[in-house]
Length: 193
Image (cartoon, rainbow, N blue to C red; front, side, top):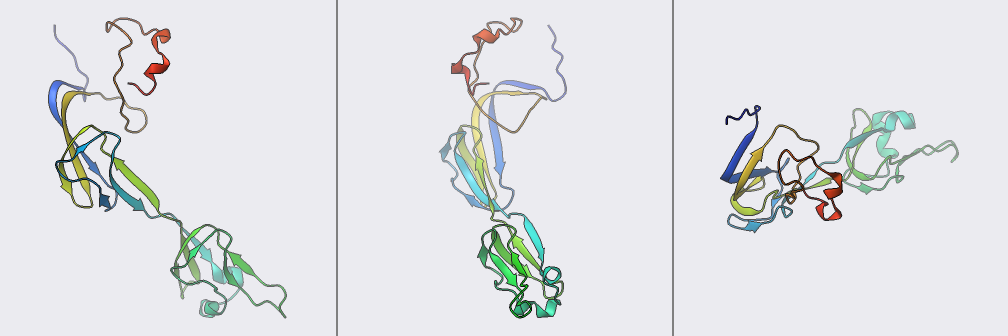
């Protein structure tokens, strides 16, 4: 009997499976070639820079960029919490002061002497990359990637919802043409494919 496969469908009963896991930016590789890893094991880590926010100090204070050093109370590199004081005008006779507070937590990345804007960068976002499959680390590219290798059956389709995942394959039907009865799905199937 012939089979009609849709494009992208691949079925192999037994094969060597290699999966290259990459970091979006250089980071720390936590395994070495030859190490045995589990699918849920973190094999690499890095941090993505947080988003930056611009604070228009000169506009808020009503001063020229060259006058900013008299009003700014923080410097480049300072860590700040949301609401921390960034700059303050002296006011008129000590009254009517203008206070500029940090719009978010982060680090002061720059203060432009030309535009009078302060750049505040949010804390870095940690990224962890899992091995994705149980196997042996076949190759490591320092600070960039890890290739994990294993043997198994390989079934590739063309349908996907969400990101990558893994789980135990659980059979709830005896034959391919048997209707799936929801009553056969029990709490023991939680997390299974």
